[in-house]
Image: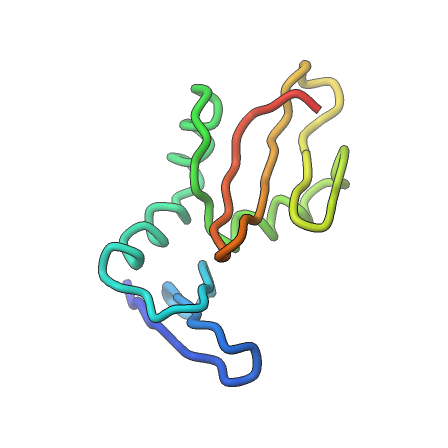
Length: 110
């Protein structure tokens, strides 16, 4: 596994890439703890297992954008959206981009 941190002069962000694929971006140079957290937040299975168990978890930019593009959102604002199949019950996956670039997901009522 190859982990890279690349700074972009255009948008002034540090991008963390795993095997050439962007998984996270932030304004400050990531330290070791932030690199580990970014890698953990990109683990699909673990993140969705945690959400299904009722936890609010940090997810990677890749998961956020993949989920936004996978099915039409049930409800969307500029920094958050609900997604999931309409017939799947009263709770749906909710993703939000917060100040500072961190992204979180959880199961929540629309």
